[in-house]
Amino acid sequence: MSYYKISDLEQYFKHYKKSVREPRKFWGKIAEENFLWYQGWEKVFEFEMIKGEIKWFLGGKVNIVKNCIDRHLSKRGDKPAIIFEPNSIEEKEQIITYNELYTRVAKMANVLRSQGVKKGDRVCIYLPMIPELAVAMLACARIGAIHSVIFAGFSAAAVNARVKDCGAKMIITADGSYRGAKTLQLKTIIDEAIKEETSVEKVLVVKRTGEEVSMKEGRDIWLAPLYEEAEETNIAEIMDSEDPLFILYTSGSTGKPKGMVHTTAGYMVQTAYTFNNVFHNNDDDVFWCTADLGWITGHSYLLYGALLNGATTVLFEGIPTYPDAGRFWSIIDKYKVTQFYTAPTAIRSLMTEDYEHVTKHDLSSLRVLGSVGEPINEEAWHWFNDFIGKKRCPIVDTWWQTETGSIMISPLAYVTPAKPTYATLPLPGIQAVLMGEKNTEITGNQVMGSLCIKFPWPSMARTIWGDHERYIKTYFSDFPGTYFTGDGALRDEVGYYRITGRTDDVVIVSGHNLGTAPIEDAINQHPAVAESAVVGYPHEIKGNALYGYITLKAEGTSRDRENVRKEINQLITSHFGPIGKLDKIQFVDDLPKTRSGKILRRILRSIATNEMDNFGDTSTMINPEVVQHIIDNKL
Ligand code: WTA
Image (cartoon, rainbow, N blue to C red; front, side, top):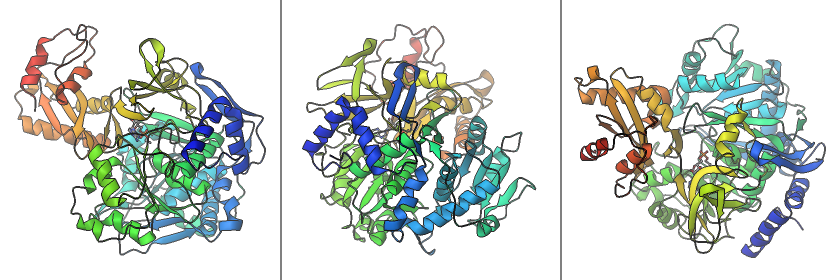
């Protein structure tokens, strides 16, 4: 019996049971039957959850790129692997077949090797959504270098922190990038990010916008001349199952961003398995995931999961509203997209546009719709279902995280009956549980708790780069013996899960996880600001928006409040880009605090979200009188 494809609900339950009772057999069979190994593993897994020590397919030897490309060449060499849709509709698309992708990746891999990049070296990639980004990731993986993609909308300070943390030897960037009608100067941001002492030896520059850039002698090199001359074949590095594949940074509630480390074999097996089942993959499909490759969704489904299954995947450089708000729908029509995977924030903003943008285009190729990144509200779910899927396409509301590597809880298209706003059932292999006080599992249905997973799965992040202690503390300490997701969830009467949001201080704005602590840090740099607390509150388009409570220093109180507001948002933008801007800024005399001096963000969040009837336990508060004052002056 093969476990790779689930055909109906009954089979889902069968596979699920098997995966819990005999996880070695279940995953072992999937891994054995569907991938190319240089050498098989000795043990399917070994773990000690409390110590955050997890290993899968121990002793196996494999290269993920050989599985993404090489093994498809005999059967699917001429099939499109990547369809590149440029930002401008004037520019011609690129249809990159598996054969062509092989050549591009081989050449890029040879360039990287010629520039001294070796197995285990870290390479940061700061590129727009162009084919070179996908090719650079695959080239790194082919030669065993660890890629760390940094979203090309991040500021120099954010790049600096990431490059420093992982000790990158090389950065791959471009002169600039197109975003709708605008261009961004990427190379200038890199120059700024590494102007001081750095581990970076080489900066490889892709030409995209053709604008002037300064090239530092001995450090900066144009890709094109090296690429032209590079050999068209490349021998892949033989990797151990547990060799790191990539590092991807995600923000935490406190402190600096966490460099989540994903390793090779487990990530390969599970991204492929989940892609195949969640999206109901067929051989002639055209899959389109709108996420940037700088996020985990781009890594796992736009790229690895799709290619591992020999699928055709769309890579779109632009934005949903350029040249007009029908761009997404025109792309679906143009390439006859079958699976469309996007985020609630995109849906919410497109549903406010004129419906003619949709009706102008033929969307009849669509078979599956997907949503990821934050809870999808009911209104958006129905709009997506009625107007895009025309009520004939299942919607998969996929819940997962950068840390989990692949989809954990989701309907399987054409298998699991959907229920709006519910991520429904855990995938085979995922032992989801709800935990309550004192580390006890909450059993039964119609219950709520902290969402945890009590058994390891192949694509889990293995550590935080350079800080295993923090990895243990963040994920394995709150509920010892399980992995804690940081999210709350409820389980309904039939066992379906609904994610209720983060239980810590991370706010998801337009699908981007923003740690409030680093934003407060930035605000506090303003000379007039004494203290600040940032919380999220529901926002119609963005899912959540940020509300800042700010106390001013004595010398700041005489300043014009509007100017201070503007300056604070400018300061935030310079650190995080416009995504971190506060929608509301309330100046207050004091912030509610605990006796030990901790700001009670929970209470501020209740005020911002208008849930003021129950503040929970306020016994630790030292200054309860400030709360009423804050409420009276609420924006
Ligand atoms: C949230 C994105 C509700 C959740 C793949 C999670 C969701 C965080 C959903 C991870 C969903 C993601 N429904 N909430 N379908 N998908 N989330 O690391 O809070 O960018 O913990 O990974 O997004 O965000 P990340």
